Image (cartoon, rainbow, N blue to C red; front, side, top):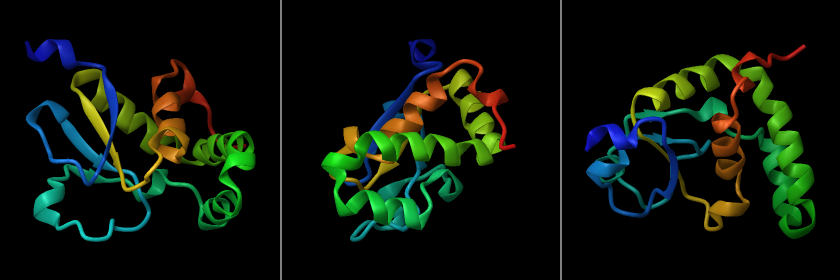
Length: 130
């Protein structure tokens, strides 16, 4: 039964209860989520280095509806500077289920969805900043 979760990367809001089926729980927000205790979070890792830069995040939040596509493009570019952390997370996901956690209200239009997609792409680990 456990083997069916190998290689899966899931996304969940940090405010949802932890579940054994989450596998490795990784927070991928730059700031600690409001109102969440460390006991409630039950984190295995907090990978702040995989979050968008403050300037990109602020720019995006000024008009998320119109800026989503450009935000995703710029964030993917930022991620190239963190190839080692991406590779580490990708290797973990090959061995067990990984759940990326965020406080974002709209998970599908957040950096976590872009990160999930990037982690799922084969060969992306070889892309490095120039």
